Length: 517
Image (tube, rainbow, N blue to C red; front, side):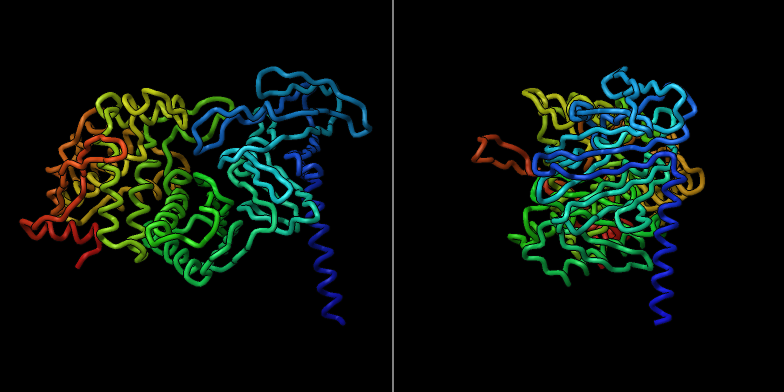
């Protein structure tokens, strides 16, 4: 009986602490879903300790990692501001995503509005009677010039929903806390009745949230996820989180990395039609997981702090995204989920995609990064002729750099050393992103050579000298002609193949890349 009383007292104390903490937070959000079947959420903000008679609330128009301006403000309706005594407070729109509140001398106001959410995208919220996916950037407004302010959030689930999956810190059942709005915006929620699997990996808490668990081989899937995480830790030699959440949603396309989570669409079940489909999906999860390091930690200096009201430009997405593609294959290889031939085949697909595309002669790799805001998911009749994707050419440059660094350093250094240095120096020590010059200086330090020729492949158009660099790893490109019967287009194969090593170093480099012995 005494133990029960102690436990009850402890729970009561915890609830008191949560309530006290929320009361001490100037920004307290609440979201409910009274009309979920019509795709609406109801949002309420208690805003305390106002110091000015005019305060502006801002709604982001883009989501980091998804380089497109969205019409989020168009889905905000019934916006209203009141005093704590229920009197209406004047407000007006000053731009597409800003609400100016004229609150006189009130130190506390209550803002309420509804949000319509019915788009199927990793960067936009979606609410239905069955579930809700909240990206937060299109739901919650931040006070202008106060984006670093802590914020608390209470989620009021409908009775038919049982589970909440998120990377955000939970104080108590349904009550969450973010140190600032950047963290809130980088911590999506999935609410519903999804399958939850929890385990520990190297002392860290891991959650798998699976909306479509049909056909799931839980033992194998969990084992493979563990191995991917372990091999990533082996590569980077540090874990930047206390907990991590995999949010796997209903059928759809795409995925998005987040601070200590990822949100991805699935094929509609976990019963994969063949081995290639399973490998491709695990590549996908690995890609988003490695973004934990490359983008969230190792980032171009332009990508943070963010301006959520306009485009944020950088020329370095070929590193942020392209290298992540390259490393998804390397990590999957280390995890034993890809064979050496699988790695060559996946990499070959990028050579074929870029070299059979006319756009390579008109757009450089760094320009593809800067101009992503113009053509991200906005393909038109000249897209293939005039543009390239850093998702395609980026991993190719990653491979060439990896080989070149290994060659110049007698296989003592590699691209891995570049990534670890950027992570430790600019993220962990300096707490900032890297500049373009700092990236290339790091490459030069590891290689003992500036590798200006490869840099020119990033800054200019045309085809790199593949033969020269691939030969250092006893590899080559088979450029046999392939006739596509569906399109009646003749293309080159661009298949990576192994060739006989001319010396010990070439053999060692290929063995290091493909884990061959």
